[in-house]
Image 1 (cartoon, rainbow, N blue to C red):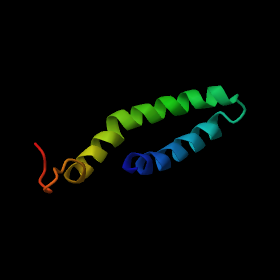
Image 2 (image 1 turned 45 degrees about the vertical axis):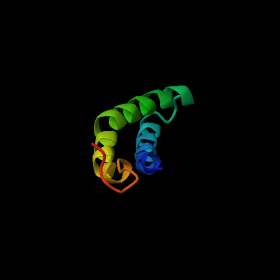
Image 3 (image 1 turned 90 degrees about the vertical axis):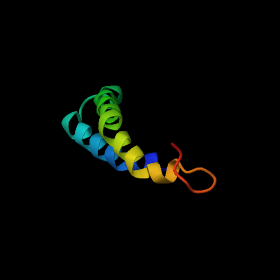
Length: 68
């Protein structure tokens, strides 16, 4: 859920930008740069930060302590 909540606004922004630039291109040609940009953004920017920010919550053991 946290990944989706983080990715959805980025996906909307990228899709709108690509659609503006490639408005007359067929859908597969519009989706190609969108998917490449989203994948790169996720891999190198979004997911590392998201994992760092949610580590305290996602990596707790049953007693509430952070797993190492």
